[in-house]
Amino acid sequence: MCSSRDTLRGSPSSVLDVLVVGAGPVGLTAAAELRRHGTAVRIVDRLPERLPYAKAVGIQPRTLEVWDRMGCVRAALEAAVPMRGQLLYRDGREEARIELALPDDVPYRFAALPQYETERILEELLARLGSRIERRTELVGFEQDEDGVTARLVRTGDGGQPAEEEVRCRYLVGCDGAHSAVRKGLGLSFEGGAFPEEYMLGDVEVDWDLPAGYGVRSTRHGPDGAPDDILVCIPLPGRGRYRVSMRVPPELSAAQRAVRAADGVAHGLETGRGPQLADIQAVLDRLSPQPVTASALRWSSVFRISHRLVDRYGEGRVFVAGDAAHIHPPTGAQGMNTGIQDAYNLAWKLSLAVAGAASPELLSSYDAERRPVGEEVVGRTVRHATAGGVQTDPEEPVTLMLREAQLLVGYRGSPAVGPPDPSLGGAGPQPGDRAPDCGGLADALTSYPLRLYDLLRDRGHVLLLYGDGSVDGAAAEGLAELARKAAESTGGAVTTCLLLPGDGDESVPSAAAAPPPAPVYRDARGEFARRYAVREPTAFLVRPDGYLGARLRPPGTAALDAYLAGVFRA
Image (cartoon, rainbow, N blue to C red; front, top):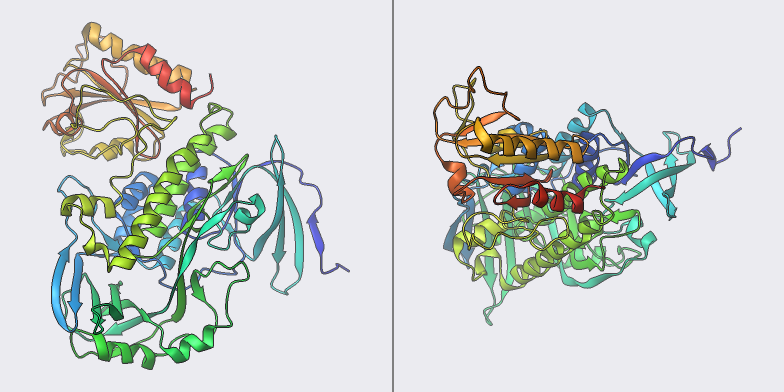
């Protein structure tokens, strides 16, 4: 007979590469990226199944770029709906209409997608990569040493019988939310505060005839001019379907007072009685810009908002990402998207470390790059929440939209990027900047224009060599030497593509010429040269997370060696 603390495996027979704790969007991103880079991973979650709640719903354009490279963007685009803008109402009158407009060269737009759909898409990607979520499995403790981490898991079966397992792994990643056991186990501080207001969420259908694809923000103000009532509606897939949020009425607030997190972090959905359709209808009656009836309540909850940030994103072989590292108001739909990019930044670095191919400093660049991002997002969302929304930001509108789309996140000065090119001024991306997309690329076998992101998709590091227009001659031999050097010094971890100006057939070498050192593409419309401010042969090293690691002008093996030494183990 097994005891209630039955042990599955008292001593692990092998060492796992990475254990990911938490199977929300952030943990699934980490696990899928690790698997995509060839790393063995387990992902565990204490919940028995995916929650059917539309919690985080805003999908930023940068996240869609991430999913493009991961290989799951098509599924997201088919499941999501466009977020075209926001209608603002003040005391019953339309005050403004915000258009979520971006420059034409940005490949994706703002979208709305229920969190459970995001998790489904990432879970299906993970399954295609050969892994699955281990549910009803909770991390209860861990210890780390110089060689790895020993984690203790408790798994609860269908019969409710808990069973212990000890897992030895090289690295542990905590994507386990605002009440993170991994963060607590590391002893990280989580400084910040909480907003006094309580809110309620509901997933409903409404019968108004407002323009599709627009969110609604309606406020009522008291005698002192301060807002004392608020309604925010975000469109969801389905006819007339929105996720609505509003302040909690006193009777519901009183019912929730005894329901508080034991760790003092009042953030997220709370247990207890959720609002009913009548509660939501009462707020709509006060604040809706049109007479409206709500129906088809799918779920509802009361939630609280805090703003907190860890003092560091990891220690030794253990890291935190997403809500385990930063929590803040949902203004501008920044939280989940920021967490996804935490995981995306960390995963390729961990994969190199597991393979023994990472430089000693590479993993420390995770904190150096992502903690300033978390700090900026927490500060910005708190300002927007207290000032009355994103529209109150004084930034120039195009810059504001690019920032909200998370397209301005950058890592200049990071130990994992090369030095800037001082000759550029403000033209073209520098090392540490997002590698922008462009169109108009051509090859000898394709009759339609290609995008730069087509060349980057499903690859790791990519070396883009912009030449002088010919695949023959001394210049071509220099580029060939760079391609060979990149492959040899990284064990084949760098893929090289050769870009040439013009739209002729010079990409096909003569019969007497040596074959080109890499696949050859033409910058047929000159878009790459314009976007990247190229005036002479230049090499660009694009990292697996879509950021420029290095810009080398003129291309040379010494400069390439210097950059690679900061990323790859010699």
